[in-house]
Amino acid sequence: MKSLELPKIINGKLYYPSDGDDVVELSYESGIKVRMPRVTPVDVAAIRAVSSQLSHELQNLTISDIATFLNKVGILWDKYELKGRKMASQYAPLFTQFSDIVIEGDYKTMGDFMTQRFHIYDQVESEFGNERIFDEWIPKQMSYVRAFPRGLVLHYLVGNLPLASIYSLIRGIITKNQNFAKIPSRDPATAVGFVQSIIETDPDHPISRSLSLGYWTPNDPMGDEFINAADAVCAWGGRTAVETIKRKLPANVPIAEFGPRWSASAIDLNQCDLEKAAFRLIEDCAYYDQEACFNTQRAYVKGDIKSFLIYLKKYFKIFSENVPFVCNNRDIFANRSAALLESKYIGHHIEHGEDWAIVVLDADSYNKVSHPLTRTLFLHPVEDLRAISKYFNRDNQTLSVYPWEMINDYRDDWAAKGICRFAELGWSRIFRSGFTHDGVHGMHSLVRLVCIERPWSDMGKYYALRPNLEQYWFLDKYPQYREYIDKQRIENRE
Image 1 (cartoon, helix red, strand yellow):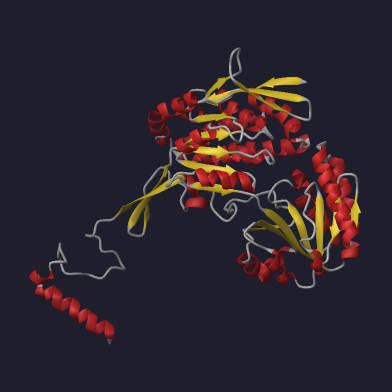
Image 2 (image 1 turned 135 degrees about the vertical axis):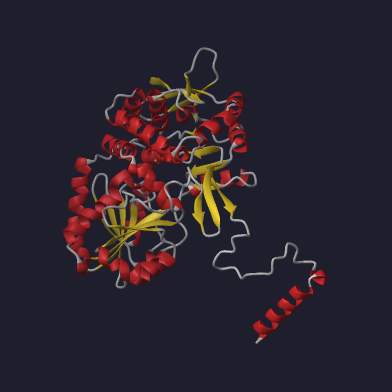
């Protein structure tokens, strides 16, 4: 078994395993064993020790400073000139068991996000209404508002979406926080490689020195140590993991929660080209092997299902030829086989290939079979697309729609029942500027919005003019004000 040594990173410094260190070991079906130094209370103390000075340095950075630095990182990242980038590209496919096409697609997306500086400005403006809110006091009615960092943000990252690890950390960087990432066992390479790449770009930069990461097992008391040290938490993961974190959070520590969600598609074949619809649906369904929350699991389809199936099978095969399903986990295959056998026993129509499947369900058996993911499409023939609202709930995320024009007819009904995001069919994995993440703006929990109210010498346009009195409650000394109040009460009653 090949052994890969990865560092823990504390305050921008890399610590690789050495003789005598207490290490964490992770083993993978690809035959690789990962060794990392265990994080300790000493690391927490080291992070806290520099927080005051580092917070001052980060606060003095402008949005331009941050965008410019990330631009430098992005350029080197895209050129494969960083050791961290090379390591991540080499090992992430082996850990995640995603095709290297998927991994590199995510890495290129985040490289472009950093390289094109306007993305940083657009993200801040779309979430807070003004791109300068981290740099300046912005007038808001009778107040001025500015965003300040929380302090230390603890990121619980996930391994089923490489892009998410990088994006979570970038959110922490944009908001000028210190960041500690609890790396996921499913994919330790992406987070380590990304943070290492930032440090390689400029180890002395405040952003580099604000980044730390490590790994601990679920029952390790170090998890509680970091939760108690955190000023905000960004949690990605399954239901049990997120619920456990939330139960441990102290008061006044906000959480940006991105837990388990499922997505769907709504298609009216009577108003679109069947082949184009099939091509787009396979993209939304099969990318990331359906493990991303925005991947379509169920498609609600009005129209000619029989003809549609022909094209769906065609494009599932083509997708698999171009983006191989490389997972070799026996439990995953067993789960899918069980779901398909159960569906067949119930009497559902099933089409499948070596690494994909389509199950056509009727309305009466909606919840009789659990969805097994792994490029499995549950197809629901419907007569009325408005009626599919009954299938949505608070666990929904994206609904991809085709043809797009019908969004105007149904969006309010679908949104009222739980859909958080609408996208054009075929584009669910590409988030557009201004998007909401699971029904919220993702950076809000990572900042404090501080206001300065204008003095009362500025009455503004909404407030009634009042007698020039400093202490209204001593009405016995101001009989004329008592008369004024009584007059107002009489006029209001009339």
